[in-house]
Image (cartoon, rainbow, N blue to C red; front, side):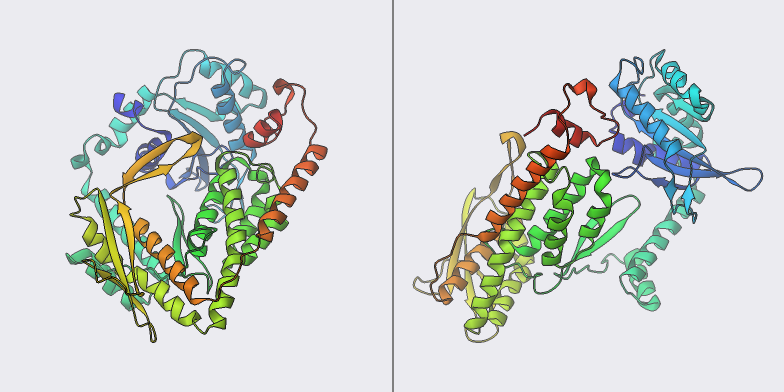
Length: 487
């Protein structure tokens, strides 16, 4: 019981409930927790005696359930999730178009205090949903684990047939993944054999135009960025177009957990692989929606800051490309920027035994008149060479976080390559004719849009007199919070 009580809700779903349900005979166990779950943390089905499917939704909690629906926010949330499980169908699951849940389990890893369950049942009884809902406390969960999943306590108790089945599923998943990435059947089998039987697994090389954007229990997504934006040119407005593009997409993904009403706009924006089209689609649709229109904190503010940096960076990127073309150095500069990634293994080897708290690295650009490449020098070269530059580093890096907090972490290869790209940008600027940079028009226009958006929001959304009068169940929590505390 103590071990279960220490689990987070995520760990409870993934390490306990999903494998337990599979061992209890449920099929297609899927962890569905996310921005569009509509109350359903896990979904699965059981074959009934007539050959049909009885669909089950599981609401997972890692807290005590106590109080009553009228006095406890946590119980009201549980009741709302149960109602959503039954009322909102899940689409395209198990090969069906729209699927309604037949039963709902509320499972907590902790206690269900006397009276809490009855309070929820009293509310569900009005629609006869109480007969289709079960509550499972931490004590009952321990009994189910002992009966169906003892290997949770001791992995050596896992039956050999289950291990074979798991091995088969993992191999099948790897085949699907490699096939989706374009592998032929013969190449896939050769790769799997190498991975299974060799101490030297196949090397994974990720091209600059692709990035693993999402890896979850039921989805693997590989994102793409179009040329010429895949090259890590350092920019004053943002680290690089590529890094900022993928990071902004990540911020947008997390921000959507509280604004599922705008999912259609969000999905249209996230499909874009061209940063310019991505920005255009955002400004035309998603940027006018809450919470992004009025974001002042949290993930939504992170996403808006990323949009601002990306918009300013694109203007700077276009100017840089045009200037490099004008001096016939674009291809040369692109090759130089791309050569930095080839030094990552050497940089990593340098960092492993590093003892000094402060250190400097020296870099030399080879091939000023031909195909360029960057070389890491292991000692300070003679002074006066224009093709040599230095970067200064600390073994520990301090990062600023939300709420004026900071954290210290070890320096990484990416920290060093980012500094190198910044110095390369300085080298490139010296090759270009001097030019006074005008104030960035993009940032001003975006600020104007944000102000106009806030005016429209103030006109369209009436301010409630008190927080108690707000229809918080009909709007996302984040939007409700913004209405309660207008900007």
